[in-house]
Image (cartoon, rainbow, N blue to C red; front, side, top):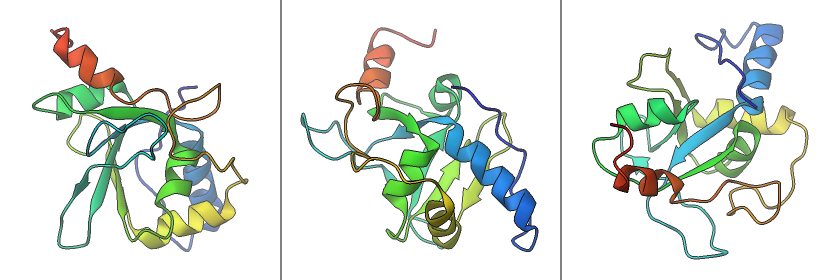
Length: 153
């Protein structure tokens, strides 16, 4: 499901707008850049970029945006925003969505991720695992293989 992301998160005191922002982000399908291609059955490990605010995991709302951001092939996984937030909550990691692209980017601190995870409907325990059946991330490496075939042109 492709759900348009809002331009920017609302102020923390705007409770209704904040809930609407996170509902849309949680419903989105996101492309997450991985640190490495995981072994079969292994947990996904996002690539974490060091910043002054803390490590940042990078996700994109469209594969083309991710491809435009990357300068070389990289492993990735496709998963729902809900699963990504559940996996990152409590890890002390910031979430960067659509940073450095033509879309409005957002950088969410660990506190906002924890809030969203606490207020989201529960998800299966397979959050952050490779896809087996129909509910978790689409296979890591899919994006890397597209780069190797010359995509995008």
